[in-house]
Amino acid sequence: MKRSTRILIAGVVIELLLFGIGYYLLEQMRTGALTPSGSAAEAASTITTIIGGAMGALGAIVMVMYLVVRRQER
Image (cartoon, rainbow, N blue to C red):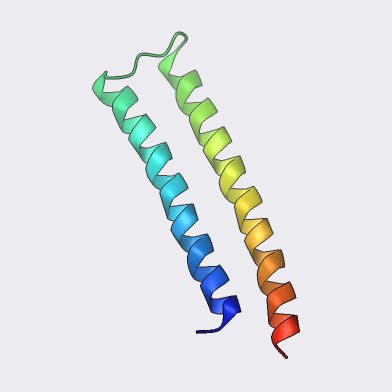
């Protein structure tokens, strides 16, 4: 398997883990297991903003790594 393919697969797996963490936190807040100190809407907004930012940054890093490795493979 090429290095570029492995980078893409690893990026997708890590993105799915980040999605799972965000989903877990939102579900725990919805069921009452986690209680925010402020409003629930504000906490949900903060969670989605942080997880979304992390996913976007990771996606950009993976894409740059993919392009660099793909160019080196030629």
